Image (cartoon, rainbow, N blue to C red; front, side):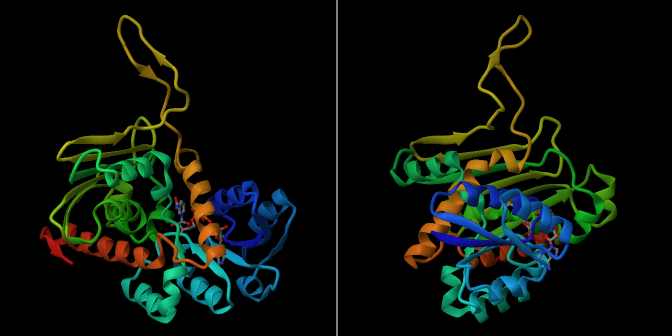
Length: 328
Ligand SMILES: NC(=O)c1ccc[n+]([C@@H]2O[C@H](COP(=O)([O-])OP(=O)(O)OC[C@H]3O[C@@H](n4cnc5c(N)ncnc54)[C@H](O)[C@@H]3O)[C@@H](O)[C@H]2O)c1
């Protein structure tokens, strides 16, 4: 049994708590959040102790592993302190908003960086993971092009955008990891951005972006992001290879389809947002964290993947600003 503490009792803290509670080999033992209301509410749901100061988590002998779901600006300090205290660690993305801060984290961790897992949950989505496996099995020959479509249902509040680090570090970061998962290291990025959302434009951020990436092996990828989407959370992937194509469409709330004189194949709405759409992925991600923590084997994805994705986010932001391709 692995005894787990969660730092940050917000949206993603609730997702992880549910997954921990459902895992037969894991036990949630402590919830930490400086906002007592949040700490109390989440801990009460599972009948566990709460604290307000993360240091209490690091000092707690009954905690084997820590899941970090605090706001991004605290990730590096929480990762370093938890590892120093001998805890197994999984941290939410992004590793940091600032490349130098992320580098400090990797440098201070040294070899321990291999064992710190990064919460890039989409690698564990059953459809995306299946496509990855089937490419490895040679079903579509050499992978040549990847298209990742990721559109959020609605723009976040202005105060969230202000602290988010911009669309590339906040949102596209998941897609950078997806592209790296399929194509490996990236050699060059080009990006364009624009706005349909005036509130986001007023903050100097984009709400619509297109990114093209070329891997070190010469394979291409396109990422399509929008901060809003009239039909909900649009999450699709297409892998095009020499011998064929594998693609994953949106998941819908039910499998029911309707045909009438004016429509065919009409399905119910797509899954609402990340909590629902990626519920399986978060659960499988936790299982991977526990397995690697138990075995003491390297985490995958690790904070090194988090750093690589952040470098891509920074390069892409530079490309969108200058209009030039950026080599990595
Ligand atoms: N992997 C994913 O799909 C995914 C989805 C959502 C968010 N995230 C990431 O998770 C992190 C949290 O996002 P969220 O949407 O849950 O935010 P949130 O605002 O809902 O929750 C953050 C929580 O952290 C608490 N907090 C504030 N300061 C803290 C501190 N110093 N120590 C501990 N807790 C503190 C807040 O009180 C709040 O309860 C972000 O880094 C975000 O990028 C990842």
